[in-house]
Image (cartoon, rainbow, N blue to C red; front, side, top):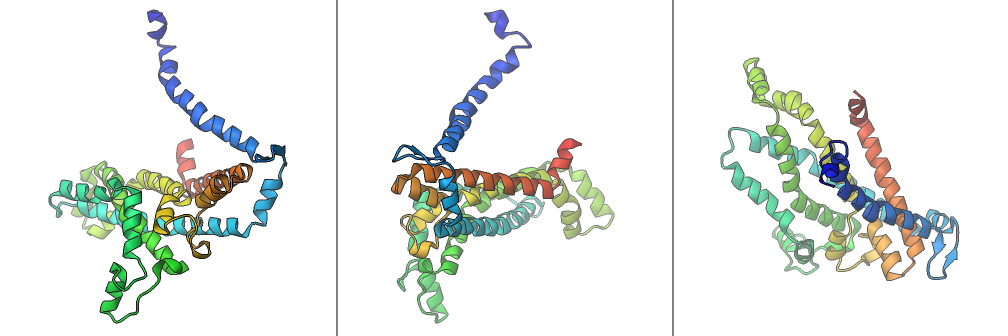
Length: 294
C-alpha cells in the first residue's frame, strides 16, 4: 500500500482527489439536480418541460431584477477597477510611507459583517432629517431625501456600500500585481525622461493585466450575485417597486419565500448562463484566450 501511494504515477491523482470529490459533490451534482428541477413543478411533483423557462420570458419582475443586477455590476466595475488601481499605484510609489498601515486600514471594511455594514448604511440613508446624509444635505439647505425609496438614490447607496466594502480588497490585489513588476523598468523609463503618468500608462497598466483580468472576473461574478447587501439595506427582500431586487433576490423569493423550487432553479440556471457568457466575453475582449493559446 505504501509503495502504491508513493508511486510517481499515482501520487498526483491522490493529491487532486479531494478537489475532484468536492467539485463533484458541491458543484456538479447540485447543478445536475437544478437542471432536472427546472423542468418540474416541485410542489405538484409534475414534469412541466420548458414551462418555467417560457414563463421567465414574460416575467416583468424577473427582467427588472436582471436589469438591476446588470446595472449594479456595471457600476461596480466602473468604480472598483480604475480607482483601486490608482490607489495601489500611489501606495506602491516611494513617496508613500507606512504602507503596511494603509494596507490594514483598507482591508478593515472587508472584515466587517455585511449584516452590520448594511444596517449602518440603512441608518445613514434614513428618511429623517437626523440621518447622516440628510444632515449633510441640510448644511447646503437641501430638504431631506427618501434615499431608499427612489431608484437613483437607492442605487447610489448600494454602490457606496460596495465601494466602501471592496475598494481595499481590490487595492491589495493590484498592489500585489504592481510589486511583481521589476523596478528596473521604471528606472530605465525615468532615465529616458518618462513622466510618472507615462510610466503608469506604458508600464504599470499593461504589466498588471493578469491581475486586472482576475479582479474583473470576480467583480462580474460578485456584481451579478449580489443579494445580502440589498437585503440588509432595504431591511428585507421587498424594496419599494422592486428597485433593490436583484436576480439572486428574485431566486430567493421564488425558491424560499414562495417555494416554487422548479421556477427558482430555472432562474438560477439563467443566472449561471449569464455569468458565464459575460465572463467569456470579457476574457475574449481582454485577449486572455489568445494569450492562453500562445
